[in-house]
Amino acid sequence: MSLSDKSAVIEDAVAQIADGATVMVGGFGVPGTPFSLIAELVRQGQKNLTIIKNDANEMGMGIDHLLANGQVSRLITTHIGLNGRAIEMMNEGVLAVEFCAQGILAERVRAGGAGLIGILTDIGEGTELAEGKSVVTVDGKSCLIEPALRADVALLHANSADPFGNLCFAATARNFNPLMAMAASCVIAETETLLPLGGVGADQVHVPGPFVDHVVPLAQLSEEYAVVRR
Image 1: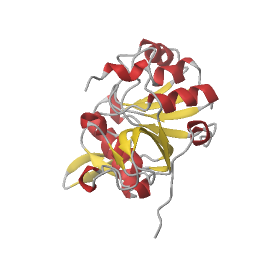
Image 2: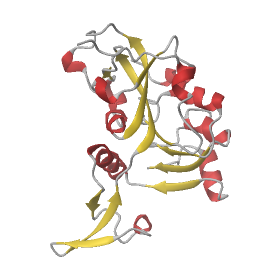
Image 3: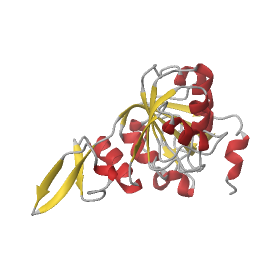
Image 4: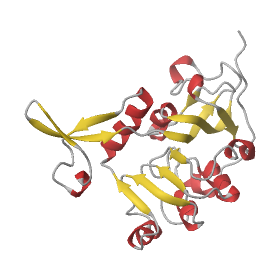
């Protein structure tokens, strides 16, 4: 049986993102953030996006470019404290922001990938994070219902990949990337190194190819990636 070659040109891959799409973006700060895919999304200019990401990056990096270009209407995240633009846009009512505890965000994405409706948790009960959420009682304990998260597209950054889409991440760059690969209808992964089929060792496959739709090899890395030294 022959395996599909999913290698793609970045312009064609990102062009599949429509206006109004929900887009998951891997990364924790810099590690694992697909800066090149984000830059192409900025260039193409899709509007009214819902972005799901651990953070809003810093000003002048990653997600901030989408915010500055007016492409994001809603952000689901754990914090925006490093991005003054995101804070200002939220306070002005230009950007809707839904905050989640970091573990809850990860679990909501994982639940989406597993086909669950949501998760039950007592984290955030009695705080602003619980506003508007349903509450149930389990064994005499009140729990919030946190809905699962899914997306139209997930954008990931891999250290290495093969043409079928088997992905390997470098150290902490793994973070949200594998979870998001399972929770999106279309997965686009940029990779620093494109290896031949079989080049990613079985024990180094962090995301199996069946979850990935497009693999974009990077010819070079921008300065945004240079924050990480390996």
